[in-house]
Image (tube, rainbow, N blue to C red; front, side, top):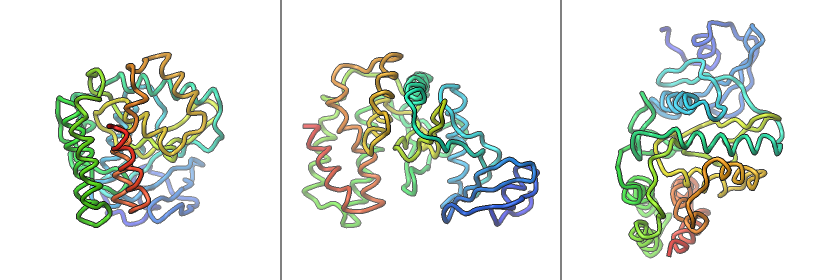
Length: 284
């Protein structure tokens, strides 16, 4: 394959079509109109194989046939080209379809907690933060070791968390086996399910930018709640109609929000550190 160095070259390389026009959406994302009239989104990975990891996640989510995700038109280690999706306003109908779809996605399962998508790297990313897809059989232990403690250590090293705050979070990790609720099999997670990664249409919501892996289904739902999701009550009610959550799920929300809050702490600083410590205190 010819060396690709621009979004236009990536779009042409993976679709076989010439580029009619393009519009930069950010430093790494470009909307490209092809000569066929189709519009694609071209994304440059922030580091080697980030694009391949995202493509593997999108394909794994699509394989479940449960939620709408952009079709991958092509990718390599540096570039990802997908169809353009979304662009509508939230509707009750789309929110309910999203809730039922998430329930089916989670139920489609994963080989283990921490399992990467097929052909996806073990050394993956959530946004711009590294995320290790090492596997485990015991969710509380795995979650503490691979989804909480690495970000606590990085935040302490960078001076974003102090030792006392880190101790509060580590205490919450020690309590996870007591408060985790009934054991559940690994779910197939989107993995970065905040509101900004939900694009709405009149009929369906589309999910973009996954950090897909095997995990606990309540983690996806806790992340969706964390930063505010339109019609969240409709999404959750529809989810519960398909696969009810175990008793006490609401009290476990803080534990599941530790992961995204700590990721935000290492990426964006002290703004989120207080929220992470508060979520840890809520664990008890």
